Length: 414
Image (cartoon, rainbow, N blue to C red; front, top):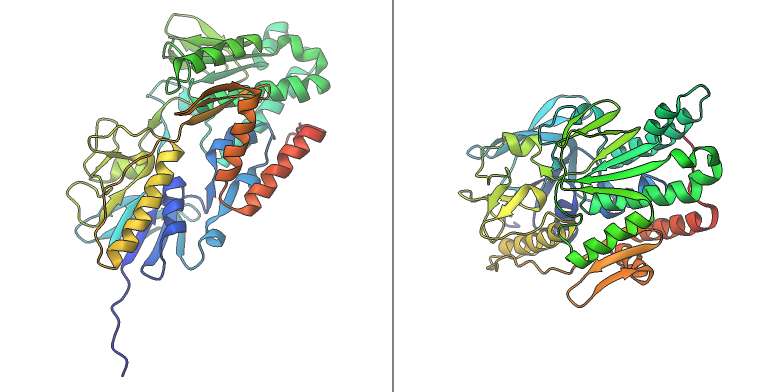
């Protein structure tokens, strides 16, 4: 008679972002019974999300279905709401039917990312558009064309037309900068040909509370980007905060106002509902505290990684690069632990940062070079292309870039 084999440990992963997806791809699923819970049933390559807002790449070119990419797992589409670390179960609410379910675990990995931080500024949640998901990008794409169509209607006053065609971006980090750059390209290359009578009223303003944009980059690259934007007639306003957001204008702390037809909010990160609800140790930014093996402080079977976590004593940036490395590390660690082997602490290797700044120019803050301009743009595209998770994504993005170069971006509103 064949001896009974112990059941595989029940591994539950919350989230399908860079951290969770990297863990799934490198994990030996023969060693674990894997359940994934996430509010979206796909992985999204967020570095190219700003490009999708104007049609440089299409939404489906930068997403990968979880069920296809990670066969053999159990997947539930929902959002975690409650955690019992003593009973070892997590409760989630379905995003489809709003029913709640409990899932037991032996090992839990929290990789739910973070949400955009509104800093409780009045009117932001009601009047701003965000850029964290493909659905957000679709809303921005639709609203952009909407503004031009509305501005084309007869009988509008000059003030109303200028307001509709003023696009505001709050937040001078990589996401805000890349979106402003993509929007400028779209306006100058596609919109100009279709709405030539409106061009003199179009304006883009980038607002940031810091004294310069792209604070994580070398100062020389930040200064280059600011001058580059000025040449493109993108108005950069730094050292100023938004204190209130109304339906059609932003009120700043110096008393000035920015009328807008659309505002995109991209300032900092805040905790998701799940992280806020979980009774786990957190830092002042509400990130879950973990040790150097990514295990939650005071817990034997709960791990956290990515933007929702903070390694005690370290100051890792909230980037896809960190999340990917943590996911890879935890997969290897779990593979070793299942075989009774020891694991070493997580070590982050910084590979540098890239950002697109418009007009076929980019910046690169790497350990060996501080690059800028059109040559760096080729590096930016090559780096992002190699990071895409499947050959399908790589081929689709290449085709999108080729299509955009040959035929331009689509300006349909749908």
